[in-house]
Image (cartoon, rainbow, N blue to C red; front, side, top):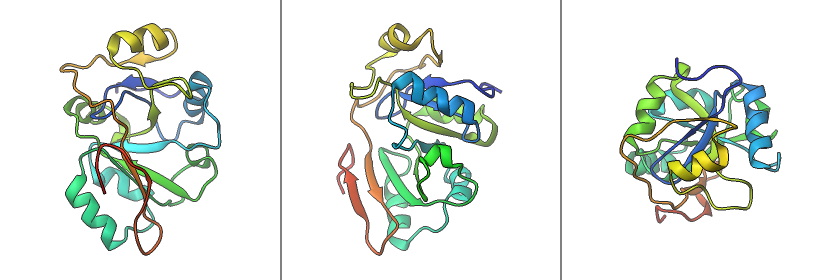
Length: 182
């Protein structure tokens, strides 16, 4: 297994570099908030290589969300749903919702195969209120002494954050416009 309890990983995705830990690891989630200087009112999201791995964390998926999943997963889209009891409050900042995403990045998908459960609790790899790191070199310079970095085999990301859509009502609500236009 590539990730141990208490460990935090830095990795490339299809959009920006990510920072993640096992979703049930409170100690590692605390490290993410401390490393970034992130406001604890801002939740982490769950990412995987497979929707099957993420569905136990989602209470219900409206039909319009299924259409978005079919069209844009894997890809630069984060969908927010009402969470199940499997999602710890420390991941969602005590909110009753959880964001999920499946990056379209072969390196990230391969990484998920080496992680127990195939799911990471994640955020972007940056200090709060600063842009995400651009490449492995910058990740190493800024965070190499604080986290374990996964060097990408074929670096390729857009540098644009994912589109975030709230899927808890009768219609989708765009919370952040990113790489995918909805």
